[in-house]
Length: 463
Image 1 (cartoon, rainbow, N blue to C red):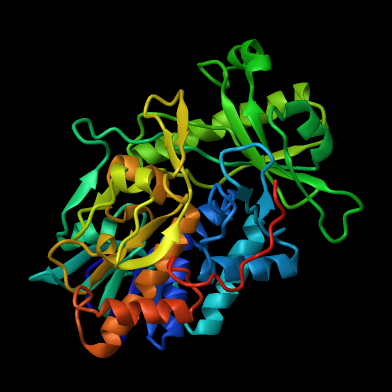
Image 2: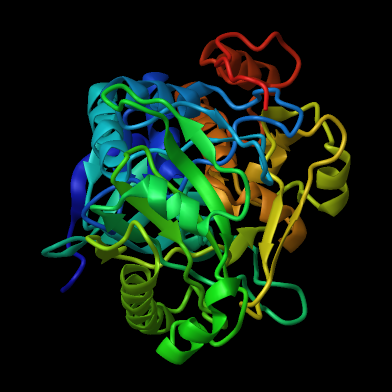
């Protein structure tokens, strides 16, 4: 297939690469500022990890203060109205103050509707394959669609790929994996179980006090989040070939009384940038989850009549991060540092699944339990019209353990979307965009920057 023409004969104000939670927030934010926006996504659906059944973590500091608002909160509000969320539910015993489970399919459908309402052009099944840049200015991107290669043109560009693909293709400096080794956190795949008696499953599996919520249409509270280890079944799981180690951890969440999303798979030594490695991981993790489903059905009360659906794609925790004008680091996270160029706050603890695939650790945010996300961490060094958001923002491997989760990703996505729109409309560069203007627009959009009264905070009972 030869490149003969533009894929769409239009120059957009903002192009967003990647339709996960980051790209959704970025495209929505840009379009709501009046920018003509296009979102490209290689899969036939949007939603990323939120469309796999993972909780959106986390909106509240460990001290119980909500610091994540804006589009991230709006999505939860809309899903709650549809029955696809139960709001923010306190965790009586766990590593975060509150959890926010959502229905994966309703998340995908509702965010699709939101993008359509905002006028975003979504190009599904469209893969980014190249980017042309001159002197730190991205000119256009090359994409592969169903029937041809082509170009897309824009004034400003946002890398929401998670892997810094656009930044790398444009020539930006990136860090890949852990310094010295290139090691990356393991990959995983979510498992959905349907026709489950979640109350009995929770009673059999939970090792810590579960989180419960009352939902319209249910006659009693349902266990929407519980976790633990499979230690009691180590020998059975080894004999069945599910895991090659003992004491495997698991996490579950749901917004339904008869379904569970199960996070219990893990595969180490997979380079999330390598399509061959990811393809092999898809095969192996699907097998692992099929065996896990068999174990649950045969040995755990509540799963006797269950059916199991491994997710369609592998979840990647870590690949590349841009080298930005500022790099978030361990000291920033441990201190809960605040920045003058804040574009939002984040509060998820450092969550590192070690590359050996056998252990995990959570480290609390210091200070008041939240840290600022500086605008400079979204700007690739030396580039004028390119921003990064989400998992690939400028951060060390330690800080990445905190920034990579969905609530921070939506926060940086919304900030990048507004900044890109303002830069395109004002004919200025992203680094030269007045931070006061950007922060003013963020506040107007409901984003909490840490220096104003948090309006519209959801009411969450104390633990």
